Image 1 (cartoon, rainbow, N blue to C red):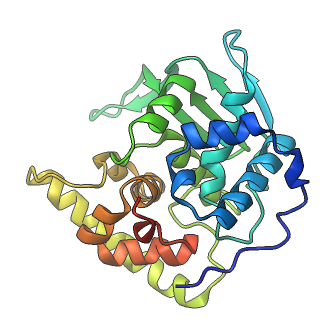
Image 2 (image 1 turned 135 degrees about the vertical axis):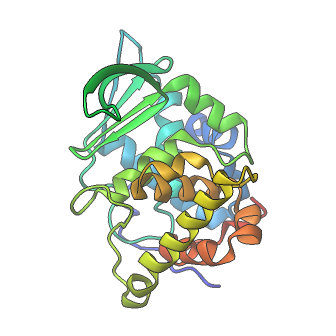
Amino acid sequence: MRLNFPKRWFRQDPAAFPAEWAAVLERNVPYYRLLPAEQQARLREMTQALIAEKHFEGCRGFKVSDEMKVTVAGHAACLLLGRDDGHFPTLKTILLYPTMFVVEDEVREPDGTVAEVEEEHAGQSWDIGVVVLAWDEVVLSATRGGDAYNVVLHEFAHQLDAAETHSDGTPALDDAALRARWADVMQRHYDRLERDVRRGRRTILDPYGLEAPAEFFAVATETFFEAPVALRSHHPELYALLRDYYRQDPARLGA
């Protein structure tokens, strides 16, 4: 499968990418290490563009370093490596907490009453163009490969999903054949995950994907990049759908 990469990304001067940043990609973005040299160069330029064009801000007095920016932007750029639809055009801000953060939410009880609860989160994606991440969970994602968990990939998949309207599990699909397959494949594999969880079976897909179609797409994306060989083995049709959407074939890279 030959991948055609967009030319318009390469607006940055390759010589301007600091050697320290390249070392961060090598150290903290496992997918980067698997790429051939040409694609590594493209990912570096995408990373540089994201850092230049998005606002990074620390929360609770947290100071955001260049390593943090490169790590987050490098993971996010993995999702864009084969695509030609801009680099998260509706995303404006990336907020970083030092650790998992508490969010107050409303939960409707079975009797119809609404209760306020506090929940810890490793990340969130807001349709208004904001991604929120816990840095310690980003580090965990970077160092514990192969387990289908990556908070950056998960939250930035939501940004792809929400780019046109809102997060509903169906990102912008510019290919008619892909649009024709999308809903059917996603629904059948969602239903399969639901059956597996109900029957107590182990699954490569995180059961959190059952929360909503948007979460299923984000969980499937994590698995596609973090455990592609396992996803291709257990869910070949879902893997093929994501391969055609992302225009990448990570299982062939040995990820």
